[in-house]
Amino acid sequence: MKAIDNQGELWEVFIQSKPGQSFKHAGSVHGFDKDNAIENARDTYTRRNEGTGLWVVQSKEIIAVALNESDYFFEPATDKIYRHPTFYNLPEGVTHM
Amino acid sequence: MTTKLESAQTAELLADFEKKINAEIKIEPSDWMPDAYRQHLIRQISQHAHSEVIGMQPEANWITRAPSLRSKKILLAKIQDEGGHGLYLYSAAETLGVSREQYIAWLHQGKAKYASVFNYPTLNWADIGAIGWLVDGAAIVNQVSLQRTSYGPYSRAMVRICKEESFHQRQGYEIMWRMMQGTNDQQRMAQDAIDRWWWPALMMFGPHDSDSPRTSHAMLWKIKRESNDVLREKFINKTVPQSELIGLKVPDPNLKKISDETYTHGDINWEEFRQVINGNGPCNQERLEHHIRAHREGAWVREAALQSDFRNQ
Ligand SMILES: [Fe+2]
Ligand SMILES: [Fe+2]
Image (cartoon, rainbow over all chains, first blue to last red; front, side, top):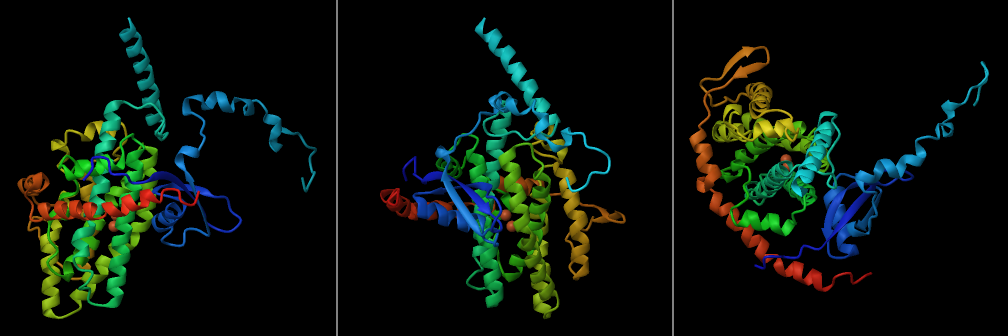
């Protein structure tokens, strides 16, 4: 047996639990190609009808914000409270708004 | 000069890490973590993954001899789940920077351990009942608690696993219940199975808190949320009434009911635990050899798959 025994690439698995809903990250699997990865994802993460949709994406293709940069990265959103409906004053008695 | 600066930085990182732990914020793979935290997780998660996979062997022993098509299908589905649990956990363990090949190599070299309970043989069909009910039952108590572990990938794997475990214990208990409604011989087999599996199931929770050097650190950093003894007592309190309900006797002459739902138990044979965990149980060699053989015999599949790498990209 070789010391390094190749087990395939790492893929991230996303499941859509019902049609129309967003895909949610479920975990990861090893797979040698697209077909193999999506079949492994099915067998590993959807043995109980967890999904109506399934995505796999190679882990190395995912771009993520580094966690130590996340405060700085999302900072532009923090001072724009006027984007939230609760920011506004409304006259007493107004409905359907 | 540099070392002084470095240690100041480390102290700051450590304070930040501990602040997160105290605030119940999960630690994620790219976060800074103390080396001891990482090493503890590498050991604990991989040991957990190996246990799921090695645990398939004693049950697989009875697939071809399951007493009905119904029970055979249930057992197959249950064992397939355990393989899946192993995969979830290897994925979580890999986020710590160690490859799956490496984890498996450590298992094969005897450097990594797995739950000692799987080194006992399954002698008859009642053992399949006893494993589902007692061994999965004990694992569930531990895993429910670990859903709140501080390491994100481990916690998420535990949530998924706990969802799947709920049928494992029931199918085992159902087997025991049906045997207790059967012939005298079947009842005797069921009692014999609990007699042999009760103590190994209690040992699954590990040494007493007073003898468990790693527990305090693991509790401080919230890798573990409840101590070995607390979890063991939870299991006993849940399981004793279940056994009484179907007419099985827990093989502990010193078991005492101390209040409505709490029991004290007799002494655990820790010498046996040490023997089995250190390789001298009835099936240690067989379990490891089987895993090595299956891994070796599957090598050509991985090689062939690699040749067709990304054929459809
Ligand atoms: Fe499991
Ligand atoms: Fe299980």
